[in-house]
Image (cartoon, rainbow, N blue to C red; front, side, top):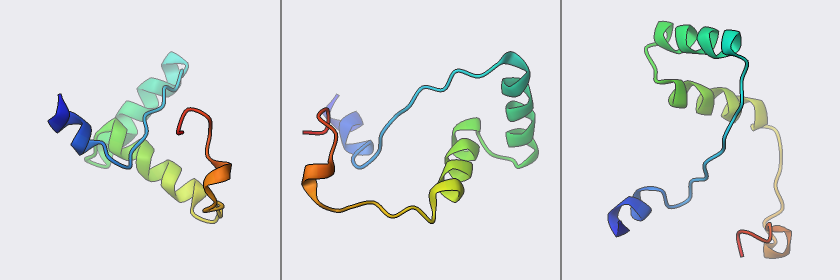
Length: 66
C-alpha cells in the first residue's frame, strides 16, 4: 500500500457526477484524442484554471489537508 501512496504524492482525486449523455460524449471525445477519460479531463481542467493564482500561505489550506 505504501507504493501506491508514493505514486499519488501531490495529486488529489475528485468525483464528478455527469449525465449519461455527457459521459458518453466525454468517452468518445477522449477516444478521438487517443487519451483516457482521466487524462482528457485532467487536461481540460488544467487549461481552465491555468490563469488562477493560488496563495502559497499554509493558512489557506483546507482543514482536510492539515
